[in-house]
Length: 190
Image (tube, rainbow, N blue to C red; front, side, top):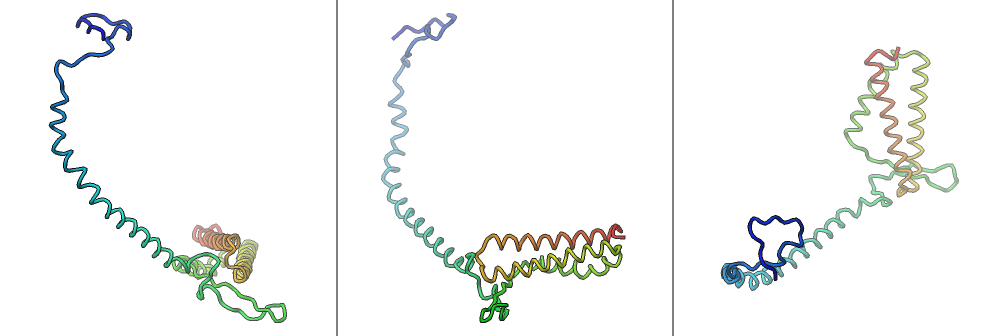
């Protein structure tokens, strides 16, 4: 061990500092005395209380997962419920039946779509004949696409691509209806 430096000595390198400095008195007995009362009670009580709580928490998690699986078992894609499928009768093939999916949509979407459809005739009346023809052709194409997708989903309800295409078609219809509505309100449709 090296000697401590004088208080006013200038240090130019870390090598000049002492490797260890002994404290003027032993501090451990005071530290141990302060820790002693807490140290005796904590190790004995903690394992006894936490073990049942761990088992209780594990049981609660298992029960939660079981309830979630039980509730969600009918919501899996590929397993349509009775409300989602309607039989539409015979198809073009002899002896075969076509199943068309009737997907339940959001009530807010239905209300907004219905309001836009009600104002559509008034909006179309203000448009030029060419624009009116284009809008009607777009809406007819979208409606045909919706029917085709719903029919295809009736045959393969778990097909994620068809589901995505149907949602995109709904969005396209709303986009066209909204643009027609906005154009009619601003007077751009004439």
